[in-house]
Image (tube, rainbow over all chains, first blue to last red; front, side, top):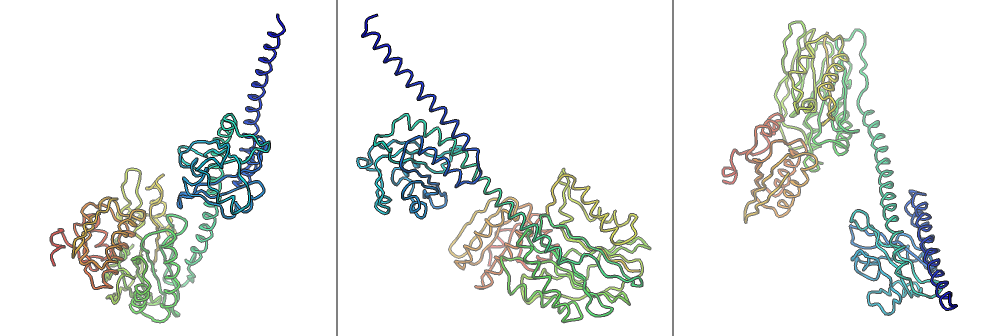
Length: 439
Length: 109
């Protein structure tokens, strides 16, 4: 073989070896970056590690990642490396379409800019503000499922040469993985944030349950027994019940249901129960208390919120009940000795917090031995089974007619019946049940 | 849920269809509060397309009533389905609102 052909063959082989080496480096880099991408869920730390790696592989002076803020339509510098990193991280933003990064974000395609001074798209504002001199840029969008998360760029090769199309291909491949990792890190942050909200809700739930009496101090020779349960649809809710001693021999008993549910209803309920305890002690009869509560609630009305509420006073010696109903479902009156199932209707007024003045008429009833009053909120009637059928008053009455010894038993049995009816369906509304028996 | 507003020169009709609950009522609230800001009167809410309304939806209508009351405006609701009418009657809200069987009746002064 002539020497010239030998030389050509050696050159070709060397070229192939170089090409193979570049490919090996390419895949080796991808493996390295994939290790980084799974190394942390800390968004800033993840981006920092990827940029450090990219800068080294691309032999570059500086780099940065800008994240896209959907609310403002701006690209905001999240992490930067290099001489002026701190200044960029503090306040560097670009509109989508502005500068090289903005162009890449808008058009969603990577770009090599060998000489920024010859490219009209280049935005020199950052260089003017920081004193940095940008010569060349390699920039790629960060996209996941067609959604723009931001852009990443490396700046100025240290050897003064320009970035190649091969560099762009490698960088874009990095960035596809980076985008997924950034998305995962953002989701992880949201998850942590949701967990914190959940923890706060659990604390709020415990505090709210603390507002409601857990047990009722009934003495052995008392003629009445009372039990209640409150089951919010979510951790907190807008139902309330209370039983306070207004004076020896006179109890104040209430049950209420605030419009809506969740946190707004819970806050409304918290203030209401505090107001109720104060106002109930100011008057011995229910009507003035309800009238004043209505006045206060209407005065501070927010977004039309209101409460349906029954307030009654019970003379624990005579069994005389005096009560006012503000738009609440009338309680069931069960006369156990005769099996009569009645409703304590009275004179039903409108819910509290809607308009003032409003008329609330007091009614009275004499309890006789064996009488049982069952109060409930309408959440119990909203409990649906898998076929969409609601729990009815008739079903409550079936349970009441069954075998039970104490008000606590009856409350538990009604809850059990509702839970059984709903099956796997989630609880839709707050549920409160209160039972009062008279011996 | 869908909310359509027909804003005339001296009256407005808000037609609501679908379920009105905690999650959908803000859309109805937006329509009502926008008209109240302009002190439109009368405002008639047509509920013919609503089969279900929870207490959040009722509260939104209460807010409309309270807001119109501040400028001595008229707030009416019309065409309640049986289910929605029961919700209003159960809580005695039929005493609070001016309720009409037809839109024509609600629009007559």
